[in-house]
Image (cartoon, rainbow, N blue to C red; front, side):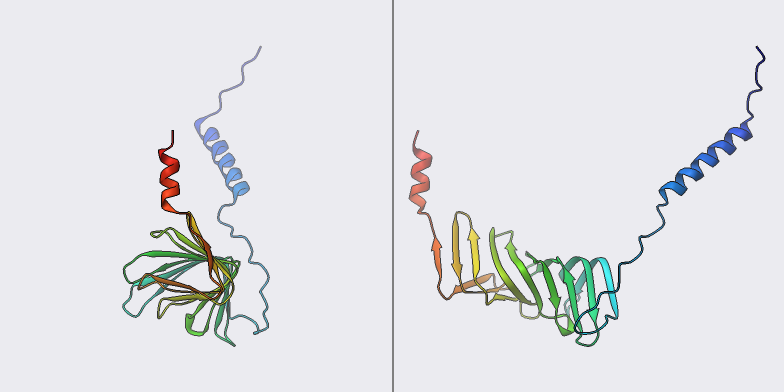
Length: 198
């Protein structure tokens, strides 16, 4: 049986480069997906929109006090409003405590204030372990005031309360629930009694 000549180093190198080029062409990691259609709004055509946006806002002292993440962020120059889809907001108070807010839609008013979250809006205070759920939540970054004029559910397990209005001042770590307030507060001794039983 005749033996075929063994390929040279240059042929192996050429075949390796050819295979690598084919693999890179197939993967094509440098090509960004084309942008979606330009969104339209009753306020007019936007001057810019961002996809997979991460926005950091700074206060007058240069401290980051608000971080926003959204799959799509649109700004319309006619009303100077920024609209967001499923925004997630990280809010920082003067003591650098974190507050987390989210909703189905978000809106930054003219000049970037206030932030309004609508549709399953939520405000969560990790340090205090309380959570507020409502339909519309507003936040004024200048004063640190968060509020809702729609019915709210405030939970700090095992307690929960409902009311028609909610106010929180994050810089002062103060919250108030008003109008038609009702709640569930299990007594402490019942929990201790259950723990002590065999």
